[in-house]
Length: 516
Image (cartoon, rainbow, N blue to C red):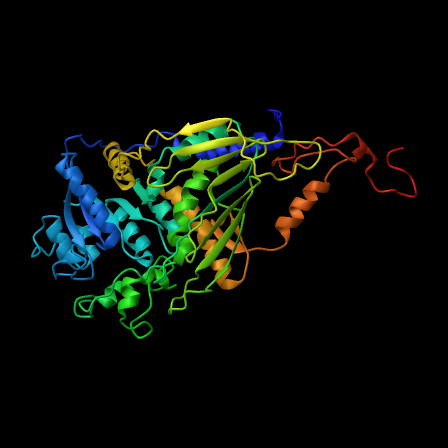
């Protein structure tokens, strides 16, 4: 089983993969000042709901371990659940207490994120708000001289994601996107394996995120009587008084969306504030899969699905699939339903071999590689599992010792902040590519359209027939029958080995046999 080293499809894909994969390996540009190892980094938390409690726990653990990081500020529009035993710790004042902050200190315990950004004793901000606030807060924070740990999905729109990347570059700030799986070395190991040419030209990757909840996806976030307009700054949360990068309000006004506990606590169910599982769940899988494959922005994206079972007033679908095609000559499939928990599995398919990722949890077991049987005729499908030709065992996978991917992602982020290196394990550049892919899928589903990625505009545009016609023209572009050539412009070609009888191919012009 072999593929010529000089084959154009393998050569061009590996070249592209090497460029994209460099973000996983290359050293980053540095700042002028390097923080001393014993200098405390001071963290402010923006949006201290359920997910942010895990970030607070990590920082408190690191503080206990004397790793040079301390919590100094919290911000949330909700006072929080004061009643003992009910959602303990979530919200402004319980989180302040958890961090050991004085609840009367209005400069460090506030409902207005801008107050936190004004504080000179805040070095880093964590953004764990609903999606529609991510970009505004991240950009303002970087402009204020802060480094940023922002939760996924990094933004609500593609334009915002590009703006976050540009702001990070302009201000030379360290930013990481909270995709926990990027702390797992398996994805880089797979990328290294692919870049070495071990599976040939990469054709397809697939991933999934299936769940099954009888109460409905995201409805498991509890509602309480204490959640009222008296304890929640609804105007601030909606964001309608703030302008986004497009000049439009961040969110709807209270006349359009009056106060509703479900919208407040279960906002992922509604389009104005998030993208449902397209952006909340698919981003996890898409980020590490494209990192492993070595691709970034797609060429063409379509999204499908529907709201088939969870009729509970939500906007977002309970079944969804995104198909992304890439100029490198490959495809990614991301699929899910919230009403069945059987996964598709995570696989990368190459011409010579298939990578199958195995295991689960914060750090998966690793991956196995299965060779391909390439024959002169069609190979029949089989259920037999061949012995893997290569097995990668994840050194961080230990079922007996619980691991915390969030902790490891923070370790890497803090190291990068101290060294002033922008190349974290989960960069905004990677985050923008993954988010744009799934967001284009969501818009395709909602608008009934297919989208292209325009490299020059760094934006999506409506698709036309050119994707298929370009590929068909590529297949027919040859000087004589059975001559296999590359795509005009130097893109990947074919590694087919035509059988001898294919020389009889070709149109008969004026009754003349082309093979004569």
